[in-house]
Amino acid sequence: MNTVTVRNITFGTGTPLICVPLMGKTREEIVVNAHELLLQKADLVEWRVDHFSQVSDQAAVKSVLSALRDIMPATPLLFTFRSKKEGGECQLSDDDYFALNAMAAGSGLVDLIDVELFNDEKRIAQLVGIAHECNVRVIMSNHDFHKTPPKEEIIWRLRRMQELGADLPKIAVMPQTRQDVLVLLDATTTMAELYATQPLITMSMGKLGVISRLCGEVFHSSMTFGAVGQASAPGQISVSAMRAVLPLLSA
Ligand SMILES: O=C1C[C@@](O)(C(=O)O)C[C@@H](O)[C@@H]1O
Image (cartoon, rainbow, N blue to C red; front, side, top):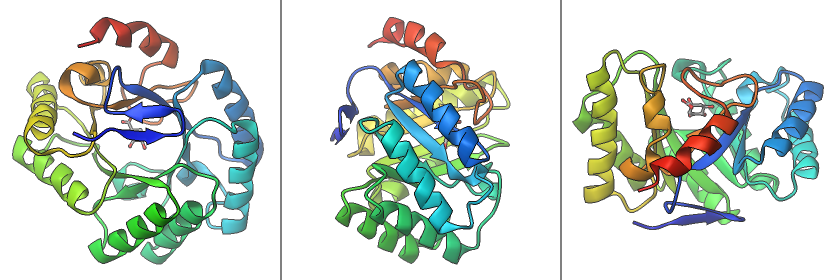
């Protein structure tokens, strides 16, 4: 399996990287949160732009990106618009979704973008091309906030992401039973051992799934999301707790 290096961090080796989401609604809140995050020494920061009240205004989005770059010049920055159907705050038209991501990729201000798998594949391929030309990495993602699909389906989605040019395929699913958590871990490990060329990011959400956010080094998930203040998904625990536990679960 390849590793993927972005600035000073490498996916696919050692303990999972810790990504902290920025969830502010206004520019002021986002800037304050960014200063708080810096103190926590996240490996990378995800701006959840779907929470930003001016997300439809590309100039406003770009101006926040510049502010974030000034505050965190060395921290890898992931740009994520999470759509409503995959657990996000709001919805954009397909045209606006792809235009927003293309703007971010071309801005020179972000290191990674998140692209949701369940979209028109031609447009995904185009966006991946733009990102790669700009030396921006693509996390391709899929979320199921209600259930855990069967192992074969999880593997199929991760493989499809890889085929579409994802640098980092990612899936987050909701367990309804303990067995579901095992399904996610089993799918991740099988994918890693048999099919993956790229480092994977997987998690089982909610309380039952917390263990999956901590054992990535054993079961081949290369990044985990930790909260500073507001969590962006059910089951996220604090960055400080993660920093304490991850080294104990080193493979
Ligand atoms: O895709 C993900 C994963 C996530 O949903 C989680 O479960 O930690 C959190 C989101 O902020 C991120 O974009």
